[in-house]
Length: 195
Image 1 (cartoon, rainbow, N blue to C red):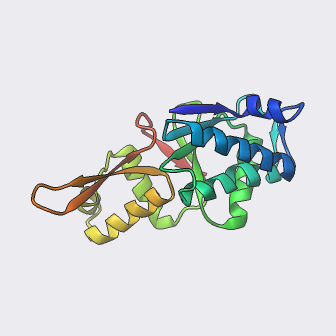
Image 2 (image 1 turned 90 degrees about the vertical axis):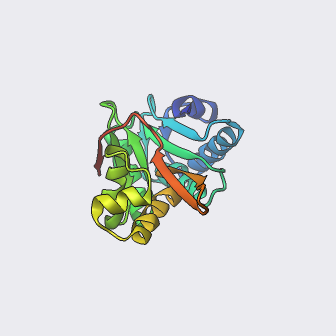
């Protein structure tokens, strides 16, 4: 796992710790993309400790547009989470995601829980909880647990993977065919709330 200290990157681009205005947000996003692409890690933490303010424009340019590139796999097979957010950071990031009515990100909170910021289809919320809290790893496990069709549970897990909220590994079965297993991007997280 690689952590990027946003305040340090801001200091290189600006004389303060305010991630405000679209031009600064664009510069910051471009800088982060270069750091991410050079990283050997597929799990990236964006640490906002020391960032005084992130306004709506900064949140849109840095977080929302970065997530869009992440989902389009422009950054490879990577997963990104946020940490050390202040309430005002969280509010502006949430507002930026709300404008597009799609996508979101996980936030690692100080108490060790995960918080989802953004938009998620209601049918995926329970599945996300089951992967993180109940160690559900396959469509078969989820189908058995929820008494659902395996095709439906497989589709839901795939959608969470495509949103870059869980990881996926393909396994070739000895009897032929393949099976995907899924796991949280942060293994040690056992509880989760949605905001």
